[in-house]
Amino acid sequence: MKYRIKTGEELAWLLGHAHAFQGGQVTDLHVRKQRLYDESTGRHVPAGTTITAIIRYDLAIQGDAGLYALTRVAKLTMVGATDFSIFEQEGADCSDIGTIHAEASGGRLRFWFDPHGELYVICDEATLEEISVPGAGRPSRTGMTEWTFQASAGTRPTVKWLLDHLDRTGVPCTWQAGKRSPGAHQTLRWEGRLVPAPYRPRGSQGQPRSGGVLVQAYGPLDGYAFVIALRAASPQDSATGRLFVALANLLARNFPGMCLTGDQVMDGAEWLGQGLDGQPSPRGASDQEQEETRRMQPAE
Image (tube, rainbow, N blue to C red; front, side, top):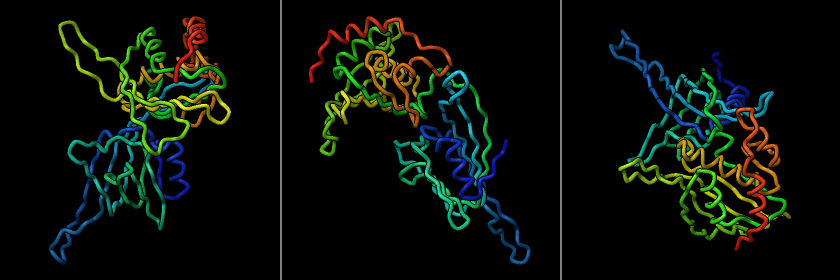
């Protein structure tokens, strides 16, 4: 199916349909400049510029059997481009999309693919073509790049508690403590990055992983015992995705509370009960972990 994007209403549909390509990646980019030969002047004159971006992004979709993972590969063709910028500094990559920004004004469309304006396009209109395929497990980008848990009761977990329980579930990690910034929220208690332990094949030293998951612990906050916020630093990395989901499941199993993933609000039981593949999440260690949680008294 091909969708034409020309008006403000059509642009709003595009951003809603694609969730603003949040957490996506521009995997390919083409610029095609057309020129026509003007016989009267003997010169070639510009006849339009077309820019085509291939964007891969993941979604969590609500279906009849619950949430499931979906990967979309979109071809966004921007026709009649009069101004554009494609710029990558050495050591930087502007292909990752946080959230695309766009506007329709004066009969023109404006797209900003990154907050620094290193990739933007002003054009007359755009067309969208997409292919959707089942995602592999739980998506680690859109809708799950950030995940927040609000506990109604319980003692705020420590970093050691998280590391111990992740190790037991087969997701060993290392901890990189973060330095509190002057503008940090007054209820922030600790923050840092959990990084998947490096894979070391036999006879190899292995390589340390980058990225990981930023973890921030707040509380008490607004009458609740504590809040844990997760943000995937390298959402395209499969190890980071597994760690992200393991952390979310760990918190939801061991503490009563509510989860916020993307724009969806659900309680812990709902989060655990409807996996993105439509199957219940495993709960084998839940009772034992809950008992250990009650026995532990994490320090500040």
